[in-house]
Image (tube, one colour):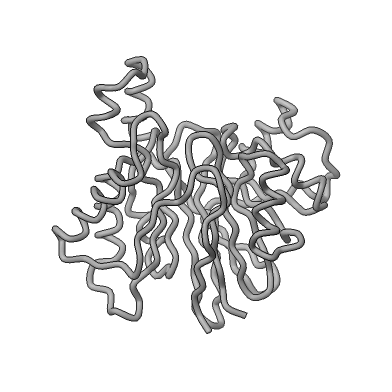
Length: 269
């Protein structure tokens, strides 16, 4: 079965994506309603996920997490400090202990024949991570990295080699600086523990994709766009200009839809 990937929701109002590899089905984040999660899975022909991987504890990534875990009776995977936050604040509601699974940054875990690796990211959360999901036997690899204050060498190392890259392109810097946000919030977004701009997302992709052969070029989704400080076409055009300016190509470049599921993208044979 081909590996496949689809976005269910992406943006500052809620985030949830689907990845299917080797016959297993996963959600990364569940920051939308249970009803929207169910509709997205139905659209992709998935009866239930095999697990939900959490990047961090902010509401736009976990709003429907407890509901989805109880509805499908599937485990939640999160870092130890993220779990500490959930338990301290009673964020998710009642859950059986066996559905509460910990993952450690940079320590791969195997579910079926899929290897999932959490990797450290820079964001103002308890212990935030991105994820790669990979079929080692055949080489299919998907990378999910949003809520990045900066693109560190370690993040770039983890993303390299992915045929599907879901990467934050949160804001246009000038829109943010000239916009309505309070100065403290602007400073937070622009900080090294904030969010990645359109231009910075382009530079990250240059680092990841430069020198790749045609057969290894990735499908790229620009994700987690700010509703206030960005526009889909602006994000697309800015990233494309950075790629063109560095003579770097990708297989496809798309902006993830904010409020409804996108089309599935398939990789492998």
